[in-house]
Amino acid sequence: MNGGNCANCNCQNQNRMDEQQERCLRNISIVSFVVVELTEYLDTHPDDRDALSYFCYYNRMLNQMTAEYAVKYDPLTIASAEACSKEWKWGLTPLPWERRCD
Image (tube, rainbow, N blue to C red; front, side, top):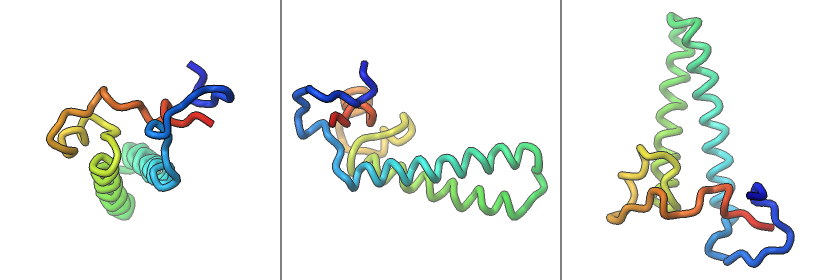
């Protein structure tokens, strides 16, 4: 596997992410990072109500963004796989890093 950076391949357009999909994944990654960092902080500061409030806010945002991504594109986690369409897509679609080829 070449990490998605192949110079001379014949990728089909259906396997390439559009700019909006890339932006969605980037935003999900950013919010996911915030949730993980807040989780780690709360592990050592469990009584910090402000941090807990931030965690709840960003965790809800992450869940919403992941669900919206799953409906529009493909599920990113097994938890969002059931929120998709009427067919089982988990494991059948290319992973995000397998789509980009330029």
